[in-house]
Length: 280
Image 1: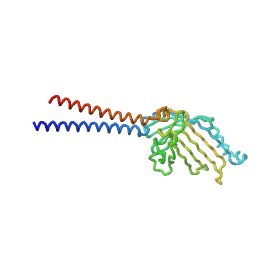
Image 2: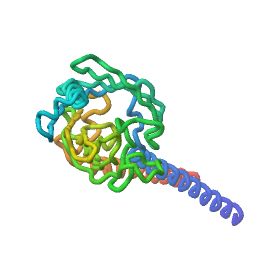
Image 3: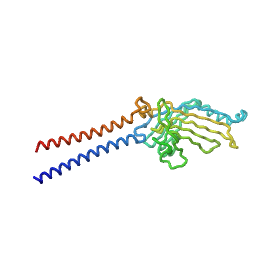
Image 4: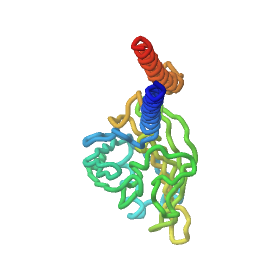
């Protein structure tokens, strides 16, 4: 009788251990699932033919007297920017296998349409994405291409919230300058969507310098996204819906699931005890 009792006790302990082990696995699975779905960069975001439309405006200011602006080279520069002013540019994803992208930029200029192609890795920036798309889910202090080891890559300075393409978005912002190249000194202020890394808006200033490094022309260009298929209002429930308590809803739902699993476990355990008592 004692041996039989010991076997039953061991069997009960083994069953309880297995149930606890199974419960632990369920709990770990749920926690991992939540962590992955909330931290995974750009999961299921992009697809081929996704697009964004940008409005481009340009302001050109001649710094030197009017007689100097009759210079043929300066006239060509002014004409170029006049053809860009108040135009629309279409950015389309031609190929995507994250983190690798190939995009086309179709510029509908006043003197005709031109198309440019860019290709690269959004985590390294190589070979060249021209800042149209950067790494997703960046934070202040990180480089715009997360795994680029170059010290010349701009860093995220802040994470402001602004409306872009008719939706309020969490963005990341960088402000930086480039060294003088071909007689042009450039500075940029750029916003990207935090969740996707897509360009939201850019304001750039180009100073065209003479031989004495004095500015001849100052050009201010603004590029702003006005339409896109690359994000939806559901990306930021706390910003785009009336209910700002989405985080707590998510947390309560998760705790509810875990509680339900625990409840089912204990109910099943009680039923087993009840059946054993009846047999006795």
